[in-house]
Amino acid sequence: MAERIAIVGVGQTIHKSRRPDVTTAELCAEAVEAALADAQMTMKDIDHVVLGSFEVADGYFNPDKWIIPEIGAVGKAGFEIQNVGTTGGVTAAASFNLAATGMFDAVLCLAWQKMDEAAGAFSRGGGGANEYWMGQFPMSPITNFARRAYSYIDRSGCTEEHIAMVRVKQDQCAMKNPCAQLRLGLTIEKVMNDVLLAWPIRRLHMCPTTAGAAAVIVCPEARAKKVTDKPVWVEDWFTCHQGGALTMAEDPTASTLRYACDVVYKRCGITNPLKEIQAWEVYEPASPAELRWMEEVGICDDYTAWKLFEQGKVGIDKEIPFNPSGGVTATNPIGCTPVVRLVEAALQVRGDAGEHQIPGKIERALATGYGGQGENVIMMLRKTA
Amino acid sequence: MSHHLPEISDEPVIAEVIAHTNFLVSTGATGTRFLKEIRDNKKIMGLKCPGCSKVHVPPRLHCPTCFVKMTEWVELSGKGSLTSYTVVRYQEPYMPKEPPYAYGVIQMDGADTGLAHFLGEVDLDKIKIGMRLEPVFKEEREGSILDIDYFKPSS
Image (tube, rainbow over the protein chains, first blue to last red):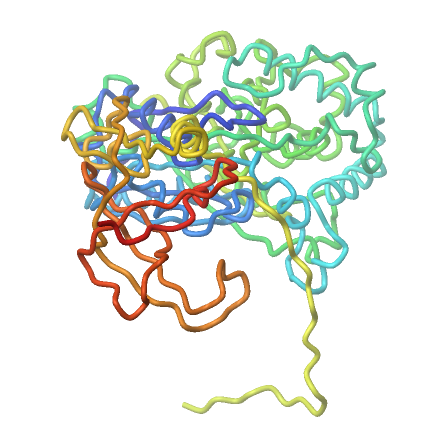
């Protein structure tokens, strides 16, 4: 029987495009220090570490060799895992699994990406379910999301202007988040006139490359209650693979998000997601993806999310508080990004998000990780045990 | 249990997928200071932990044992002892030197950690663990650990 588990501490760095002032390992230490301080713990209290990095986006291989000493974790149980953009998500899921065994008192989940050191490597990859059939083109996140966004426009009847509305909403949220990287003060006009990469994707529509790290400390119930009076319960989590874009011929706009959410909603007894989940931190690597993701998580019917933006219903203090942190188009230390979603969702549940706190009680928050061309990790957080 | 390999009548096609990129590795404020002292002053500096007093060369920001920030810089003489070494006699792409050459781990006097570097001005058959070494700096230095050309036997 699995133990009930809770997040007892969260930490993240300020996210920036470049951090030449720190090594990758020192960047990680910043997030670990923040999470330990938040939990009022020291490294001595941690008995398992799980590290996550999308290695090719860093340029280091086996970076755990370097990072473990820098975070004072020599000799502790631990391992490093990677799974492209969902890396932080599977890092969190592995941490949850470990804490739920009851074998460990406190599991540290740490993910990072220092993309100022290897952005070129990442631009090539990303889309290939198969290194040969797809790796040659190159199917990058930019071209893949352009292809998918074009199909979305084709099917939904939305216009490029609606996608610009999404980007402006994301920026308005990021402007209230001091950790966000891009805080630009955007207008629809600015977005519409931005550099075109691959229609309808303009530069501002794509997630940036980011140097950042984030950490979360997870404990089984008994320990969690001793550590904090504000535990954030991890109600459920689920990881789901798709296998890249080749399998998406039927619906190029879709990912596994709907399937993965359905699994978790069913297990949590959620029948009306918009009513029962009060905060959303959903990994949207490009502005138009946010539209489809809102449909896939069950907020609205297929191909209608753009209407919610047209009606001005999406925002921190609006009917649909989707990605109050500003999301991934504002900040994307890629392999770390799902842990940023988790940190932000936990802060929302605690009521500690500051200026971008969603008003009212947050009983449930949904955080996700996204990667490749369809993999998803679902993390459902709750206020009450 | 039987194993079946796929049947293929022709020579299998092996696709060449080119994936080449360069990485720019930040050395951080701590690494930058260490490298600049070597470049500008031919000095080897270490960082001392306020908790356990161990001196780290090359420096790192946090003590691995105490997980506290280290801020006390210590200047070392550069002289040290060889703690382990090997002589490389084979060639591979991306090797830094033509074989044969030796590299080892040197523990500086006053340091508690080891620094990896090449050994030079030494008969490869006469290297001994524990031998005394000192750094030889390059004339043209650019802020790299290779601004130290190698370590040579010290009198």
